[in-house]
Image 1: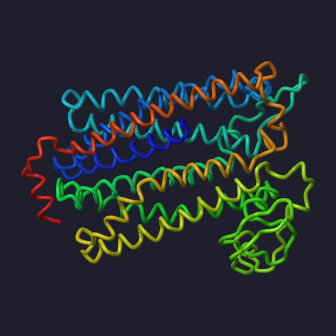
Image 2: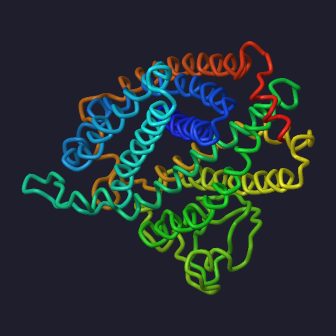
Length: 437
């Protein structure tokens, strides 16, 4: 849940800053009301993110002590920077943004919002850079004692894998924010309340969301796929359900991987497309899982295959929905299209599912390696923590996080129900926006 809440923080930071920037640029108080609305929601997400995220830091010592001892000299750099720089930047200026508007003034308040945005997005990069090093370790050397030592800080920070993974991850956060904003706006339009804000939220969400959805596919998704193909060939084969080496490998749209029989059952495929997308050659050879020792196969191949296809399938739906909504907006029909508004509202949970499936794809795809090519997952656990102890704490965390998740949903629902203007009165600035639309 910690990673999911991190995505919520990122996308709401983007949302708040966007609305605050509009307010400063136009001088329209309508956008200030909108920014305050999303700021309250961001505050809820931030508080939950802190509560659920802190245990993840301690798990490096409690559950992964061998890994931390071996690689702490490398990953400790980015994780320490995330805590000391980005988290404190974000949390400090969040307090100023939420409670210091009258003292700071319009420009100072915008600066506080921007620094919250900067802190959350910097936090995202440092976390992704840590994971990217585990996916594609560079800038290290092995010490005399066997510990992994950092040899180049800049190789760690500017890892090519980190740059593309970060872009892909952050676009996922932007898409989540856009769908939430557009969906909440659609809810207000469908229920005939706060329609002035509903139009603002739907318009901003669909326009930015369409751009983000397209960039998620290309170039970020395309380049992330190429990195996997060039550096983790067994992962590519498992993601695509390729068991035997093929020239002109097809792209599987549907199908069920049968690991025992080493085949894809009931496949719906596009001929030669995987070879073209991977190497830009229609007849390029794609290695299958049988080309590698079975010890190198990713664990849980069916789960990896399905999580990858859920991510890609939902990404395709996002492009279709956002582009169609943008076309209706351009033609002046979106606000009155009940079907499209319902579609935007129903789609709210889908980016969360897609982001979770994407993280599962990345982490399952790295298996059986904890640090790809350097340390296997089985070698990184804490040797003195028994399975029973781990199960006990896992069940405890699951129960606690379930309660927190329900509480989070209640608080978010309450804020949406109250709306941007709890008084419910149409202000002059809001009426002007509604008339302009």
